[in-house]
Length: 107
Image: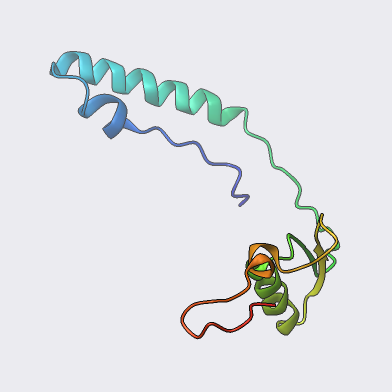
């Protein structure tokens, strides 16, 4: 059976938690169930399509995070396209002259 032939009527949320009088709750539940049945009559099967997928990714930004993400994806065998809007890579890290705690040159 197709998974698209499903119609949920949430009586707990729409009736029991928000209606205090039993007669009103029963009538509201009957209306919800009837409308759910009528809607379910109009459901149609949706054919499953298969689409060819190219295993590649685009990483925007060649800062520290972007380069790490690109390396992680490449190590999984995924082709990576790394895009940077500036002429150099490294992001903010490349602008620093020393890094904590070792005072190494960040470049």
